[in-house]
Amino acid sequence: DAGVIQSPRHEVTEMGQEVTLRCKPISGHNSLFWYRQTMMRGLELLIYFNNNVPIDDSGMPEDRFSAKMPNASFSTLKIQPSEPRDSAVYFCASSSRQGGTYTEAFFGQGTRLTVV
Amino acid sequence: GDSVTQMEGPVTLSEEAFLTINCTYTATGYPSLFWYVQYPGEGLQLLLKATKADDKGSNKGFEATYRKETTSFHLEKGSVQVSDSAVYFCALNPSGSRLTFGEGTQLTVNP
Image 1 (tube, rainbow over the protein chains, first blue to last red):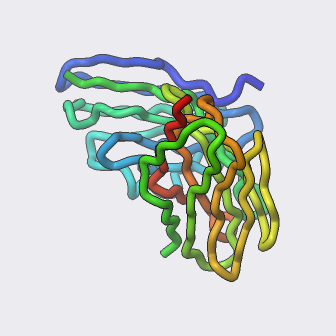
Image 2: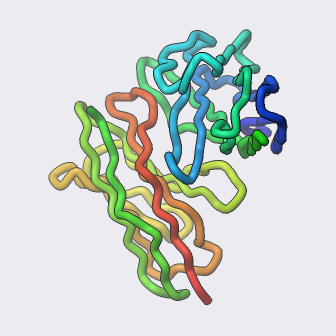
């Protein structure tokens, strides 16, 4: 298996622009997580999905952030408009949830976002 | 609520030194416990796990034992290498819910 695939690996954009981050989870996994990592705040869970349905988006910092999972093999995290304080590494992870129990999560390599 | 507390870093050791990174947790139910490692420029990778009390997880020379009586899951390695330099995260998933991570501990091993 290729693992969790994220794109792009690096993104540099100007303040005010829309940014879309993409994630392909491991085939057969039915849970998907978006994390943000910064030096100041560490690793933060933004949102997660079970069976393509958003379960908890309480970690999404504000309305500028939105996430979708239109099918089991694809998810996006969108920031519109972007701001310099959104600069961070964004990770996608997937796991399998069966019978109410999650297996360990597998992480992608991350997207390093820089907003100038 | 459920939480994980890791020893504060950074930790700096010489090659072949003994490593301990402390991790304690607070959780309802019976969580599984994990250690993840993040090498520079990469995502987190599962290092080892334990699913019930007294289980010992091990991988690449690292070990951690699930201690319910002390609510701990300390990471140990007998002889670290330069290549072990990374950030280490302790995590739990209480009663099968989603993962909760600790703050991470930066380890630097000098030759």
